[in-house]
Amino acid sequence: MKVALVLTVAVALAVSVIPAATASRYDEVKKVAVEIVYLNANSRYGDVWAYLHPRYKRVTNRAFWESCKRTLAKKRGLEFFDVRATDAYPDRVTLPLLGTIPVIAVTLQAHYLNHREGVDGGVGSASDTHLFVRVGSEWKALWTPEQYRAYKAHRCPAT
Image 1: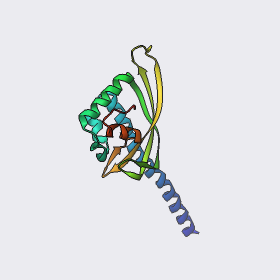
Image 2: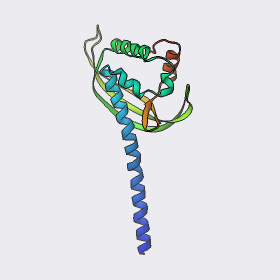
Image 3: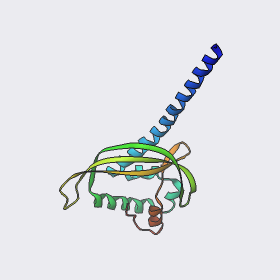
């Protein structure tokens, strides 16, 4: 009877530890995803560049990449006031230069003020999912295939 009780408690503890370990692993990448949004929103593109996967940094130069980021930010005219990572989950995707790899997909929900010319400064929200992979001990952001093709052709992507 005591052995069964000890075994039941051990199994219960093991099962309860697994979700906690998984949650903390995803919490880290979720924080990185939110930080990248705020870095972009504050034009800290050098800090964002550091999060980009190293293989993608060889596709374009930092000056061109930053000019694309500035152009897109100006075109959007958004001021983010609330950004949250609402979900994170493992996935497997096929990407240029990287092939088929396991990633963590992070879904972000952002609320913003719209400051574009001709727009009445409305409040809006958007949701998007970004992909991350661990390189060494760091989380690195990945491009979509469309972003990769644009930078490879030395043109700015639409997003």
